Length: 282
Image 1 (cartoon, one colour):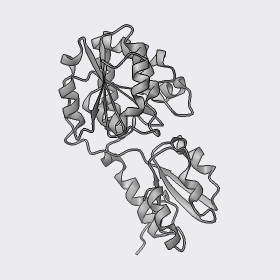
Image 2: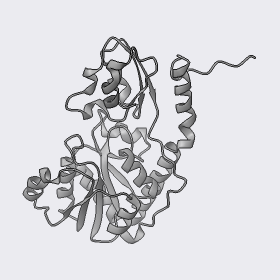
Image 3: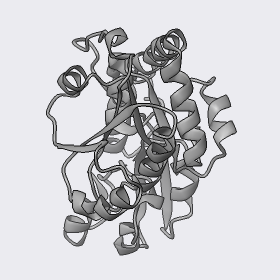
Image 4: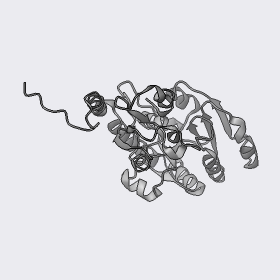
């Protein structure tokens, strides 16, 4: 269960012996951490999406903490290969897919778009539910009103990419290639560049992912990298193909489902989450 659900039921539980809490959001994401409301004198087991979260979780003030890292999981069996070559001519269209609220800070992306428009004919499409009005003053101050469109919620990233001729997407990096939307976009063949919200330096992330996850910490750097790709069709398509291969291999549910199954088997048997099951000698 997620931590929000756990908080609703923790007073009904005698202990946490049958509980695994799935941490879907990095702790730094919260203005007020929900974990301060958890009973501290209990043992906790956490399933994490990001390696970067292990250190954060280890610092929580609980009786004991056990963690297991398991990335976002997808079934790519029916995920198509999108043809985006026809999208790679001016005016270019880039996209952000996110929930619009303070926990998803897109202000740096809007500032990056301002820098990008200095040199390129480009339009930004923002998909997602939420309150867009909070960004209106910034968009007007940057003079972007005619080039930023809030598209609302979409039920299909594939159709959104086709309909708006998206050539490239931006997202937020916490430890994976842009969360669920970013991974799905990359799997479709859309290149994704990310604003770095992790605690790691841009260069370290680049090296860790062999250059296939590219993160940036200044609007100028993100705009420059985006412009370089949009101006060079061959480089963009090569990067998109390599990124697609990475996410389809790393996040395929078939590669990880046995780890999840074993974690819950161990939970029932009161063993550590990553323990090997004892052999059956009968």
